Image 1 (tube, rainbow, N blue to C red):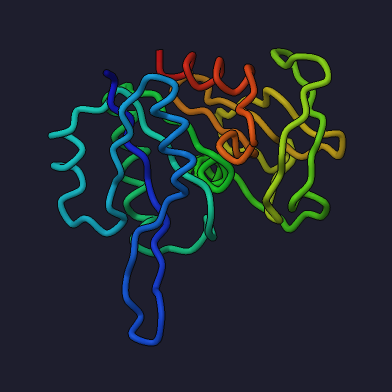
Image 2 (image 1 turned 180 degrees about the vertical axis):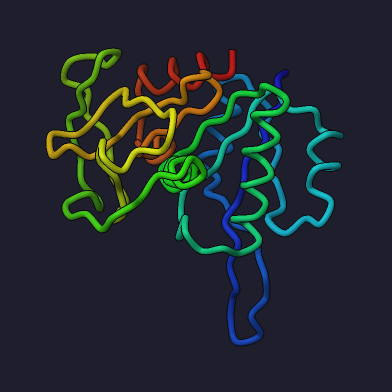
Length: 198
């Protein structure tokens, strides 16, 4: 079974500011259903590169939720994951915030946008099934003018916001929706994830 490392949120909880890693269980369930073994990455691991090397993953997912510009432990860990992916030629998928993080990594920009929180959007692009509709849970986004270096748009929403992209080396992919949050995961999402981590 191929192992997929998944990054987690890093939050301070309660009056004692307890530090916790968090991840939507629906994402790990989805990765398991697709035939992969999800391995959760601690956000503040000091020996992260050794940890990743020991696991020897077949793929990496940067999960959603949180501020992609906040330079905390998660930000630093994900930077190491991005560099590790590039060095070892391991595919990496960014989901929503994870996609924004990829864009930032490649010197792209983000902006505040409207009508993309708890909304559904039709998306279009060269490899998209006609009439494909995806969920949106983000108030930060980017258009073609804000896209990072060497990133290629694969789909946008009708208002020009990038919803799906890849890097020219075919290692980095980003989707600005949450497959795990749909009541029934779409055939397109299953096929897309399986193809990235084939």
